[in-house]
Image 1 (spheres, protein in one colour):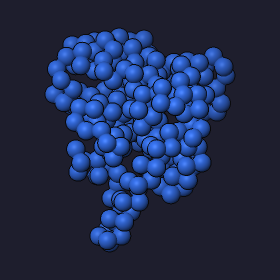
Image 2 (cartoon, protein in one colour; image 1 turned 90 degrees about the horizontal axis):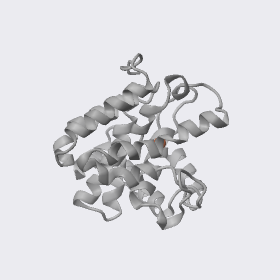
Image 3 (spheres, helix red, strand yellow; image 1 turned 120 degrees about the horizontal axis):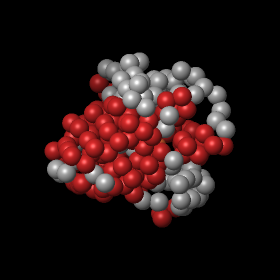
Image 4 (spheres, helix red, strand yellow; image 1 turned 60 degrees about the horizontal axis):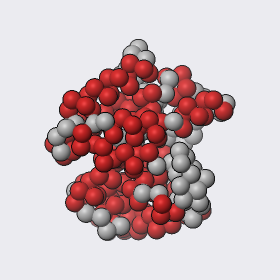
Length: 237
Ligand SMILES: [Fe+2]
């Protein structure tokens, strides 16, 4: 588990700092700012226990899914970068709440849910990153309209946000957390399929299933370790 890098700054200070970094350094095209985007993603992850690498993997999975759904070039890059920064709005969530064990009350839940809109506001003010705002804002919308922050449904949800939702859930389920062990890829896929059509876009879930099957078949042929979806995303990048 990564050490927490920013325990003493406080949520408000962090938000101001992130605004400043984005405003000053993200004016260049996103590819030129890639190292900075990775740094911001790691900073976001470092505030939460046991999620180190989550943002990076969600970015890689999202890009791979975007490519498999027919996006290319800048459009696919945009989905990948949005995945990298999808939880940047959690910078504004207090430490105690971010790592709270057990259930949240209504006020705490509202604060946590605010991270999607807050993340969009952060990138909206950051030069070339502003095009990521709709994807980040809507990554917790549900296909059937039960999500947040705007209760959008179906194809009214930006495709990038629908991709992110699937990538985020897949990585969350297939990595260990302090309160539960990881699920296998197949178990995670079963859960995503169960929720397709209600929480997730069925087309995106089907695309992830194809990627996972292709990765497992390649591993069987090689006889080596399972190649991860991250490797596939790298190869296609
Ligand atoms: Fe999120």
